[in-house]
Length: 218
Length: 252
Image 1 (tube, helix red, strand yellow):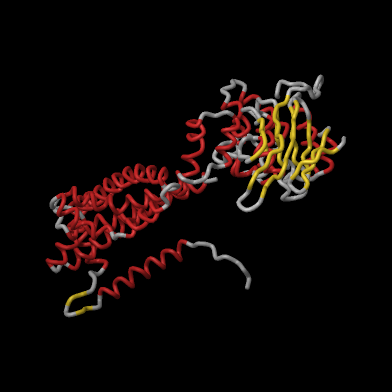
Image 2 (image 1 turned 30 degrees about the horizontal axis):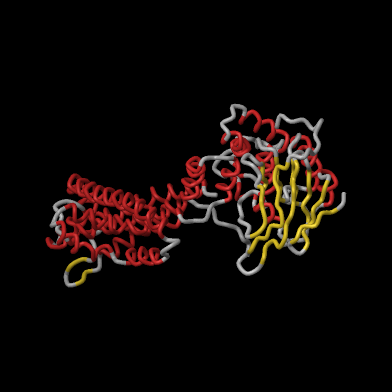
């Protein structure tokens, strides 16, 4: 649906988003001490670490949704696809599933917004009527809708913060497959605790330990 | 404990209504200082058949006073609330000031309005509007100063203009709070409208009818007017509860 094909995919040197020695302060303690991360076009990177390590904070800084006090940030460009950890609050419950998925393309005034959304919803939410209001979906269906919306985006990067946490285990492998295919040539930053996600989807892993990033060897 | 819920039944509802009418009749048999406390249901129905045209005219006048006052209060509340939302981060005291203003009983403002605006409908309207404006202002301020939602963030990331992002989120996200504020204000508007008609000697309206019936010692007319005022408040509440239920369904 993205118009990109997995064939010919592969990271090139164009950086789509990056952090360099970024420090983020919370109210009384640092949320990130020193975070460095670079995402090249087409690259698929896993961000892993224990709960509270600062993964979601790093993502929010990268998206420009949270400020840093030190270091340099190259924000993801407009049009980035994003599945937030709070996926339910990010949906528009008064809109249909279809309109939620079409949203990034509607904002970009693309004529194919609903066609692309219909195709994505059909793949990611096969049993769900796309005319149904998003507020009436179950938790797993809401998360799948947020994933479909991220994949409908037009940018070069998709950032997914634990995108399968509410999805039934039996469905995860299928959705990982859809994500892999629909990403096309876009870069992916995947925040996850699941080793299967990393193995299936990512070629590089970055750990956050004690609020600092550590690059792992492949 | 079986935990079984009793199903609603028409006959039970009918019996309850009949019981209420019976209780009304029983209270109407009580006489204090040689006069009945209330007119009987039959006498009240008789009064209704005699006074129906005048009563409907007065009911309409009170409803119009409450409606126009509410409209003026809501319009002013939207403006004041929006201004307060801009100020509240720098001057949090504004929330306390609005809350203080809301705590002033609207009826005590009536003499101020009568002095300033004269014995006329404008003074009564201003009092009703005063009763509504602060609740609406506080609701609007709360909504407009709330932190940016996750939905706004999604639209920003997608590259939506601020105006579009606002239009796609704010009306829906604010609906619940605004409807609750509106419902509270509408109830206040009906009460204040009737009271201002009672105090300031209105030529039309339920408040004026109640006072006239009391002076004339017309128990039947007084009972009828009390029930008519109750019916007006009840209808307004029913309408606003339906609006609130609709808004709650749409709420995030």
